[in-house]
Length: 61
Image (cartoon, rainbow, N blue to C red; front, side):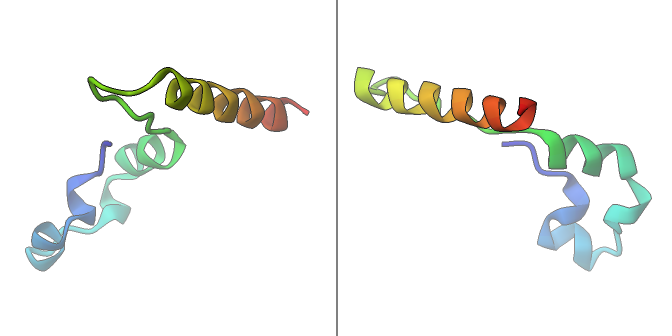
């Protein structure tokens, strides 16, 4: 999952401000993270697919 560096604690302490990086923040805010791992089961895959389809349908409605 992508997270802009200015959102990380160490960078905040160094004075970085997410407001100085609007493109990075916009990309971060508009992304989705899908589970990706070697032993994901067929049932878990189906659950992810159903959730994505439902979300897309809600956006398009």
